[in-house]
Length: 464
Ligand code: URP
Ligand code: ZN
Ligand code: ZN
Image (tube, rainbow, N blue to C red):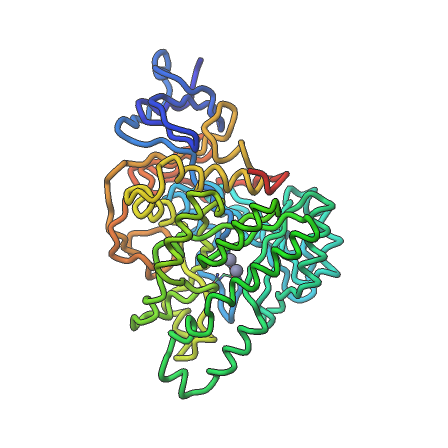
């Protein structure tokens, strides 16, 4: 068989196991998995993967690129964000198309297509966002027709006009059940959170505690009560529910109990919740780390790693929502004004590889499962993405087992001028990344093309 590219001599790793072998690529697809595939393929590009792991490239199902948010605009757009993704071994990102004002959900999706087209360097998809359930739920069938069978509701962000109340969550889950769609939820308890924030809304507290107020006003129950409530509506309606960016150990326990009862709830966590804790807010630049929900404690990290191993937590994502130090500086001592979010696409696989696999919290197969295969399954992209099977997209990351780099934002593709992991020594950066058969990272450097990324339609979410 003739191939365009052959990846030879590597250890092929999937969620199910590892084996020595070659991958033969023709056009955009994996055409063969076997031995000695380079033989008789003199014209093929040969990528020597001896001593390397060859994995399905990562799938990040939670990003915010070019997002107007909190009086700012997230600074990684579809160009820098997807270049960062490529360098991090990720070839598919799923963003949230959010309606502003009276926009429809489908208008928001049109807007997000415009943000991506012509500049995205890896493949992408969108989730819808329901900010007004009476207007937006009737649009769900059209969204599904467009290959977008998932939509999110936020239980906070009233000031952005995005918040959903219980009726909205309940009605959306009913509709998801009817249509086979999946509802994603940002679970934090708005009413109690507002009360806790109002109690410290004075210059004295803001001066005394600074950015620490962000974590002081968000005790665990702000997340867990909201997760519990969302699970209640999920259990009653039978609609598929996906808890985004779960940050707490007790939240993980709630999801585990619900899953054991047969409730159709899934949950992701993010790389930062696995390795950062709230001591970051003691730093003089602690405000940079502010995101919602905020990073919690070491005990939460431990429970989230366990949740990944036991299956309660189905995937790791980034919640990339990058703001530069200049953008973050608009807080001027008032934690409520910090643009919330952090960069993450370039470092997700390295963080999980270094702190998961090398520290024996996860096997390499579990890393592939949680960062590549199961996110693709859960969002209805599998097996096209997240697999090494013949006939699927040749989206591949090649990793050196031990080679480490010191994280330095100056050498990264992200538009951030800081990194939550600045100075950390991480292995697991992609030495080579392929997206639909094209090499887009070579020797750790981005070599892809602006506009190469394509929209990938999805269907049947919520299945593992
Ligand atoms: O702080 C965060 N996570 N910013 C992005 C918006 C969201 O809630 O996911
Ligand atoms: Zn959120
Ligand atoms: Zn988010």
